[in-house]
Image (cartoon, rainbow, N blue to C red; front, side, top):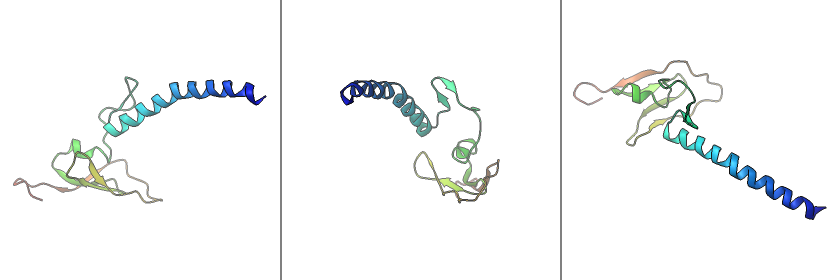
Length: 106
């Protein structure tokens, strides 16, 4: 019986690897790149502001919060954000906590 099950299990594994794994990889890549597209379709509102992309919408803001997490501009392309507390419920809006003044300083 074991000999008959092995080819069937192999076929299931190959099918799973060929179909599901590439979809997971594409979704993970889109999340890392900040893309809202999955399989060429928009997965959400294109202009939705979140704690993770707020700095792209408000270029003068250097620190922002959603009431649970605080983020600031890092030296690279991505913001540096704190972890969310276990019982904290983020607000629906993100607000700026600090801005660059006209001379380019804090």
